[in-house]
Image (cartoon, rainbow, N blue to C red):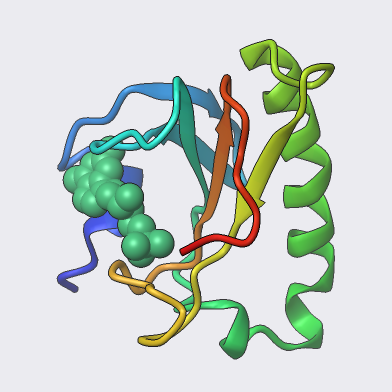
Amino acid sequence: MGCIFCKIVSGEIPSDKVYEDEKILAFRDLNPEAPQHVLIIPKVHLTSISEATDEHIELLGYMQIKIAEIAKKLGVDQSGFRIVANTGDEGGQTVHHLHYHLLGGRFMQWPPG
Ligand code: DGP
């Protein structure tokens, strides 16, 4: 399969890992938009949140809790941070493997562009 993030999970493409366990992987974005910019992905291939079903409830809940832990590890849990899941073409998704961007270390404007 040609999925870039599956290749990162398998180690075929190297990444700057921040956290890993049997279910998820967190690694630094290649093109950081903030001092801390980490991508959190499930190891199983799931295209986007649009394709999530009841069978993913546990995994998605797990990811939220781990994101909080990762934010703490990055030192942005107290200052604040943003999590974003670009979904589909108009959502700006370019890699079609579910991922949350965790952005922190600077003030985040709202609304986004
Ligand atoms: P999105 O536009 O939401 O689908 O974000 C995809 C992000 O993935 C984008 O910010 C750049 C990042 N990215 C793409 N390819 C790679 C890669 O090979 N390694 C890493 N670390 N990040 C990548």
